[in-house]
Length: 315
Figure (cartoon, rainbow, N blue to C red):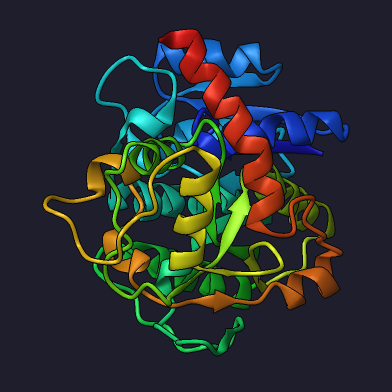
């Protein structure tokens, strides 16, 4: 299968491209500057230059393509190839997808995979959150729900075969918010803060990439899946464990002066205070999705040594 990927140099794109190529797929990545073009080529994918504004250019890019994965969430504000450093833009999340849908209709590309965001769910306390649970997106998350609706409509009218994956909080040793949180906990700069009993749905980036590949290969049209590990964790338990593992002090419950936002990257603050005990049962049944890292313990026991090694190398 030949797959067109936007956001190819972002955190998830950098995991997805190797996952796809290792399983026999060809990848074309949208490159929005020379630096990202070079990075896509280095990942053994084909780079297609463009900003995504021109439907004619996108149509040309999609001519030889079988499926689309829309990962892009930001616009370049410098020449950095890594999209984690680019400015977040809801116009890219929704606007670029509109152009992709139009271009896909011209070329006959039907399969579109979109990784949505768990923050669109309402706070559900300790109750399990399934794909049918109530939604309550904030302003930051609304664009994800708008994209979902666009894709539902396109699928219902038989213009597309869309699959939506509502991702938990993705973490890895390369994720800015993961590195920031570990640094803050190691140095006593992070308090648990509001709603310490809140459940967070987590997913290691490699498991997130695998879920996307499975959705591409099986293409269950019009379906929505929660993608997270097997055991959502309470925020307090996660902070206590991570602080211990990185050699930091026990984080206090009370709020501290200032904000964690410098450490947490682009994770929307309001989503961090919701309790979303997300279930991956449907993905396990329909996609045969089985996380390699079923809980945060397995995942962070891999992430932390890599994070520590990189810090030692750069210090």
